[in-house]
Image (cartoon, rainbow, N blue to C red):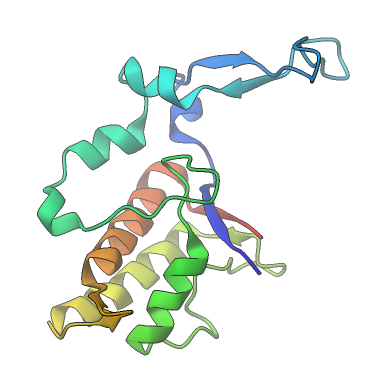
Length: 166
């Protein structure tokens, strides 16, 4: 089963900085909502180009050698995280998946609260503080863990947690 983590509230949309474009059908015509209005989607590249993406803005402020490697969701959207890889990292780190994972903490596992994001980031930081290499497939996975921690904290602060899609 796959798992992607998506901002619960897209910060660009919440802040009014998202560039929206019409959603088109297979005949290149706008798709209409039930009320007759045009259905839109966020154009991430255009939003980033005009400085309206809180994810890329905050990521750019980070020291890339200390934040680690971004791991994007399966559709390549920058503010999505590949939670399946995150859970693999947690398991390799010895963090139990029962209550500590990238799956949601609500009843059906589809929402991860901001508080849960912070708690998991703290657990990851404890692993990183110990300083031992975490070798997965011959590579040190600590940079991936550093990014996971940063991403969880970003999602807690900017997106009010995560939606879990699988």
